[in-house]
Amino acid sequence: EHQKYIRNFSIVAHIDHGKSTLADRILELTDTIDKHDMKSQVLDDMDLERERGITIRLNAVELKYHADDGHTYTFHLIDTPGHVDFSYEVSRSLAACEGAVLVVDASQGVQAQTLANVYLAIDDDLEIVPVINKIDLPSAQPEKVKSEIQDVIGLDTSDAVMASAKKGIGIKDLLEQIVHKIPAPSGNLRDPLKALIFDAKYDDYQGVVLSVRLYEGTVKPGDRIKLMNNGSEYNVVSVGVNSPHPIEKDYLMSGDVGYITASIKDIRTTRVGDTITCVDNPAEKELPGYREMKPMVYAGLYPTNNEDFGDLRDSLSKLQLNDSALEFEPETSQALGFGFRCGFLGMLHMDVVQERLERDFGMQLIITAPSVTYRVDTTDNKVISVQNPSEMPDVSTIKDVKEPFVKATIMTPNDYVGAVMRLCQHRRGQFETMEYLDKYRVNVIYDMPLSEIIYDFFDNLKSSTHGYASLDYQLEDYRASDLVKIDILLNGQKIDALSFISHRSFANSRSRVIVKKLKDLIPRKNFEIPIQAAIGSKIIARTNIKAYRKDVTGPLYGGDQTRKDKLLNKQKAGKKRMKAVGKVDVPQSAFMAILKTD
Ligand code: GDP
Ligand code: MG
Image (cartoon, rainbow, N blue to C red; front, top):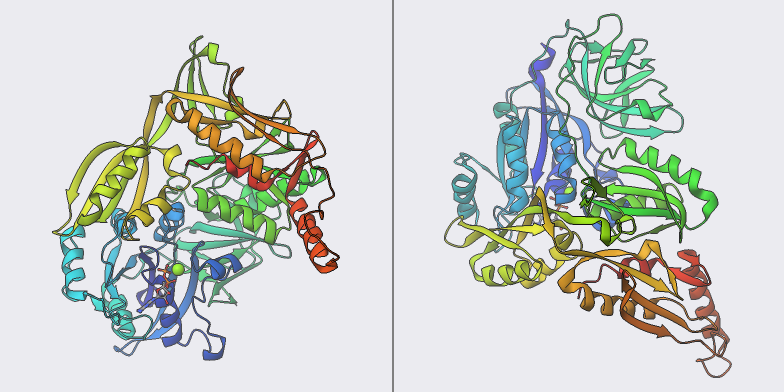
């Protein structure tokens, strides 16, 4: 039977442990990609992924493997991102698989996201094939890492694959283990169609392209399908697989991973996690969908040009198709005009959305500083959820303000426990517990305000542990904190998009830092611009931007025209990401300045 020779698996790992490189080697060894088309991390096909050297989006490819048992197997390999912001993508890929290849760096050992990702796979009952990678490194300690995986995770590692994705060692062994350890998909060809949508993207010609995993039945062009979530119906135009470029097929059947197009132009009907069935012979029940991901941080996105509001809405809808963790709804700012309040999983997610909007959709944006969601108990016994600091109600009507806390798990070598604890305490962390994983490594667990870790906590953690600590966190609950809203006034005018919320004990020091930063970032005018920070009507920090007297090229002496041109061009480029607020020009960088904590 067809299914007997199918294997669906994901590769999971902590970031940088070598998933994408391993995927490259697998594609090579199975001749899926011509040698001369091969570039490294070939599945990271977004420009952004290639530039940053990270995997952001999941990717599914079909490949053929001629196994030692003489049979040819069809593998569906799904590469996944490792960063904490994108764990959502990981759980989506796992839902389409029977097995997971767990990659662990032989010099680094088990890290925070190794655990987080492998637990997702274990929760989904996937068969796990451990791979110890980078055994070529002089600092590799494969035996130690093997026993670590066994001790910490509880996986049998006696025949773990010893690999170097870089040097191409162990790849054949891995492919054989995939054949023998990972079960073939089950499911019946004759049952009503059940296909899980695990990804989607918009194509101008084909409409929505759905990435699907078939659990039951078959699907072919001409079939009338139904999206079970909202009942919308379509005629299938084409089906196929990615290998890694799309290849059309006559049909897909249960066990397959591929794509379906059906001239779906209304993107709102498509939801990742939904089940597709056939209208003629419909399934009774949907497949279990996904855990809904809740955004952790919110920020305002505004077109630099007000006329682009409609374009921005279209672009966000298209982006949301294959980034279902992205949320957005319209909002208005006195300072910035019409825009959207958008929800993100974290700062990296926010960066990626912003960059994709700018590159793929040609938008020019101002993005405001991200904020967590606060819950306010009011004196008239209402609970208000505040995603935008400027919407914090008046102090006189507030009973208390609660903020989200996360359980942060920091895995660190013994030597850095002190440094980690100091950092967490400085960020208002509440110590929970400490677990020794082995003689050298500790899990330090803190309850921390989400607002204190979303921005630069990870960078600080890395630098205070020489890069050795890793972080994972999960939303825990909402807790009351002594929080205040701070407004920023430019030229006497309150700028709503610059308001922020701070713990009272940091309010003065942060405000002083921020007004000073703004002073450096906001361009001078021919009048003096006062910058003030205020709690209610009380000014807590202030400074002035002096008026300029000469023209901008003034400071350059002599007639060096090229230098003058350079300066003027630089100013022009800077203008693009600038918003005129009253008589003052506020650059993009100013909106982020309020994140600077020290
Ligand atoms: P991912 O984040 O898990 O997808 O990791 P990548 O595949 O992007 O690899 C991260 C870095 O590790 C890259 O610089 C790779 O060249 C390097 N790398 C991957 N596998 C090996 C290996 O087996 N040996 C060595 N020495 N480096 C490797
Ligand atoms: Mg990668």
